[in-house]
Amino acid sequence: MAITTLEQLQDHDEALAAGTRVEVRRRFDDAWSHGFEVADVTASGYRIRRLSDRMILPVEFVFDDVRKERRRQGMWWY
Image 1: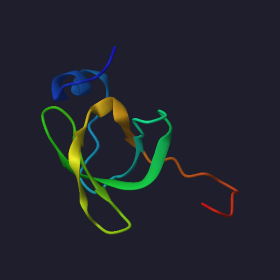
Image 2: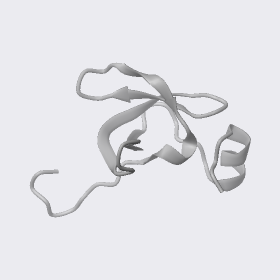
Image 3: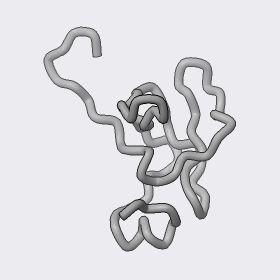
């Protein structure tokens, strides 16, 4: 079941707060991309800020397409 509203998210898990570093699901291949943070939480998803240039992306991401950043241990390129 997809989580599409803030009410469903609150029943399932905690919403990520603004400033939390996150990964977002790419729509092209469903892989996760890092280098983002939550800019704002809305009733239907997240507004996301790209860390490289601090720009807020022009689209809203549904809750299922955003997850807390997972740090990779032991890899020098992360």
